[in-house]
Amino acid sequence: MLFGGVAAGLAAVGYGARDELERLWWRLPGVDQPREEGAVDYPGAQWAAASPENWRRADRPYDYTVDRVVIHVVQGSFNDALAAFRNPEHGAAAHYVVRRDGRIAQTVRELDVAFHAGNRPYNERSVGIEHEGFVDRPSSFTEAMYRASARLTARICERYGFPADREHIVNHSDVPGTDHTDPGRHWDWDHYLRLVRAAMAPDR
Image (cartoon, rainbow, N blue to C red):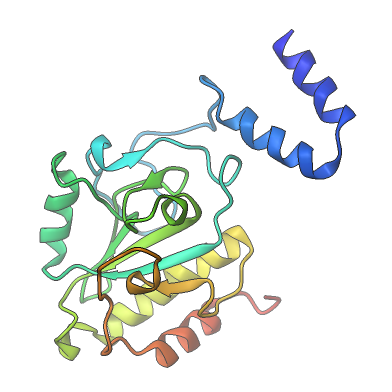
């Protein structure tokens, strides 16, 4: 009866209401997309699971639209970030961490809501990417890091269908209500966006 009722309800309402009902459907207990333990969303990424206390299970983009990438800087090393995200008392994790040499770890599936932005609506709509280093050290941001991160961001933009621009790829410091300053003034946004756009498929 539940399935029939949902189908009948979707047929009887307008498109806007149908979209909302579909999102509610994906939030029902027991309604999940297929998952495989240890799977990653970006080929070549290393799986390094964050503590379940630092993210919330979801079924994005079916329950929440994904239309942002938030750029973070660790204020520490790649291993510091992975250790913090494994700590259930840390209270935060990003989906990805990028190392100086371009290595990428995924700690939370893109399906799920990572606690990275300090703002619930932004957490629900975005993918968070941490970068090894410090905001006040320009040497933290290597070319290998920029290029690896840009390829990752390009795939995210393509997967969810949003443009590679500064409205949709944002500083952590741009998030409303945050007191963070990352990635800081040494992050080369012009260079980064050129790399992201160059890595995207020609038809986008």
